[in-house]
Image 1: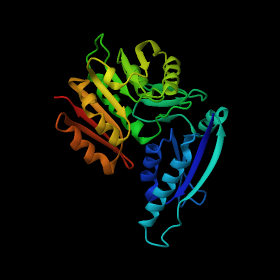
Image 2: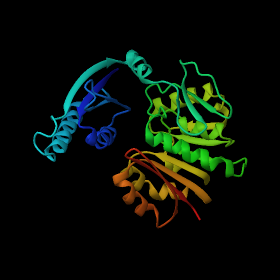
Image 3: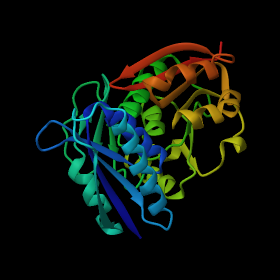
Image 4: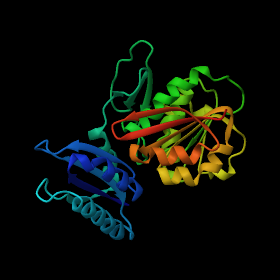
Length: 295
């Protein structure tokens, strides 16, 4: 298997919208950096190389052209797109070049499995190797989910039943964080088999594999209710999954939704407010995390 590395250089004001579109178009992960002249942003997105990619590439170029068409002529240069093909075995090398230990909340530190880090008092260390799965913890959408978990978990009653459901687990980071914050049992699901395998390995690294049930089961086939349900996905998918997400939430439980650009937060809030109460909204950069409660 080969992977496509797609680099987009564009105006900083367009970076968040473009990053969201790249994820919606199937990117399994995005890295954001400044251009060499520090005046523009470079988005590096990764896609699986398959027969559909040429159509995806055309959609991306059309979208970027549309963004540029909205600007005043001459204000900034048009977006630039470059494509590189990456052999499967080089994927982890690419991620490792970007990934450093980072403290994402008051207590939680994400540490790459290949880096050293000296733990400080009261810190929770999550050792992670994202592999080909999305979710390094460094993106605002994931970081805000971790912040919400850090706030919610201390107040939860501990029972033998699973206390957390992670929908779209990716690298497993949110389920692992919940376990390290004291939730005795969790269920984590993802449609991507490869992501599930990566998540299982990451849970093992953090010594919580026996407390998290990872699988590719569809949300509709998950039974029971949970004090915490997490979904860090795209806004339109969250809205499509609304009924199933709400049905899995225990009375008094918390639904944490992320992956939402601030421009889409009102739409998601309106969609869920007929069944749940808004408990908290967390914002970082251009992203929102919405926390609802089943009162």
